[in-house]
Amino acid sequence: MAAYQDQGIVLRARPYRENDSLVTLFLINQGKVAAVAKGVRKPRSPLLAGLYPLSYTEFSLYRGRSSLESVVGAEVIHGFGRIREDLDRIGWAALMADVVDECFSDHDSSPEAFYALVAGLETLNEGRHPPSVAMATVWHLLRAAGFAGQFASCAGCQGELKAGMVIRAGHFEPLCADCALMRGGSSTRFSAGAVKTANRWLELPPAKFGGVETRGRLVGEMVRLLTLNLTAHLNRPPRSLQFLGQLMETEVEEPR
Image 1 (spheres, one colour):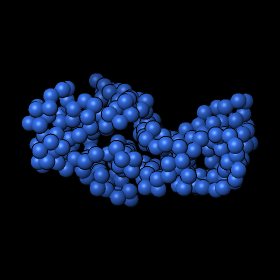
Image 2: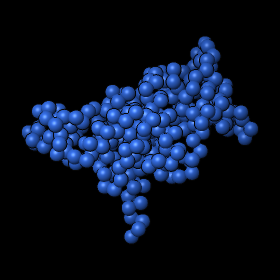
Image 3: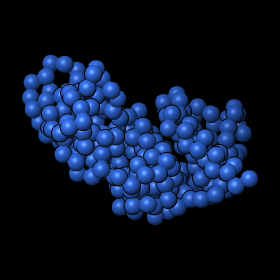
Image 4: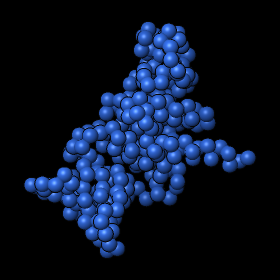
């Protein structure tokens, strides 16, 4: 049993008992932890401000015999308030949090993923193009988890993917059209622009998230690529990704 301090991001929070909350935190040193915040839903709780979802907070925690840790202190470092002002930014930020929650096990520390998530939230909060920021961040999170793959060459013949690539359902590996035809099965084609964008996002340092923007039809193409990756590794896409797909369809239909 021990008390400790760590900085982290609040990935999710849900009500628990009368005035408590169950929270999932992603900490620099301890990785992902589940904790209970007692009395946090009381109006004057000193923990309230530091436990809003997506907040970057300095936590004081207590680890006892329970599988749940206890939050005994929470001082906000950055609340990312502008994200909460816009539904689009909220949706893309939720995707980043979902990917961390789904791809990392409890107490699986990853400073690389932590600082990528913080950089993504900071850039999103600054007002940069939400899909470009969030998807660049997510590819870095996936790489830290070992799920990103590579897009430099065909996984079959090792040839350069100058004309685009093909991803087979359930097998997240880039193939040229000829290798995909030989292997058979259902597949999805991606343009040379999608290959170039994925490679550039993976090359970006976190401080440059949002520096490579993608707009128009390429946004939908990159969302499909991300969906195939997450489905192959998690067996289903996160709910936030499904919500974003619906949101983008709505945005396309509005001008009609």
